[in-house]
Length: 225
Image (tube, rainbow, N blue to C red):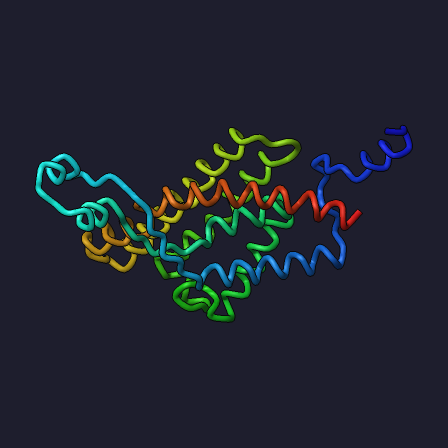
């Protein structure tokens, strides 16, 4: 390979540079906001094997193959909003990732684009804290995603980023529940439904989303340069 060809190839190599503020960037940010909205209203049924707590007791019983298969399979209705958030920050970086979330929140103050509607009154909904928590989570993820990344870093970003969202979301929910004096059983059931097994799925799919976002960012950097 000649030095001239090597230099040309190297000039198109992604090196972690930040995306510049251009009209194309604004359009891409708008598309990412639209992607977040679509993810908010998208529900995917996940079916996969698992080990229930009564595994040993079940195996000691006489069962047929169908009952055996059904017992060790589970289905979960999953909304991929959080993985999409991490895809956006992996694609756009910290600055434009936060900007896209701010646009999403502002639009939600006027239009019903949140899971349970929209408007100013939505600030008193239990789930609004999770939306606000996207901002610090993106700041954290975007900071650590600068420069080169490997699987370990992506794995840690996904774990701590998802935990940030759920902890702040739960704290906000407890604050609202205290204001309206909600029953304790309602509070615990809400936490279990929003931040129970959901966390495991969020972490797993956020790892995939960050990886895909980084690959898309490389292509984006080549196109925009």
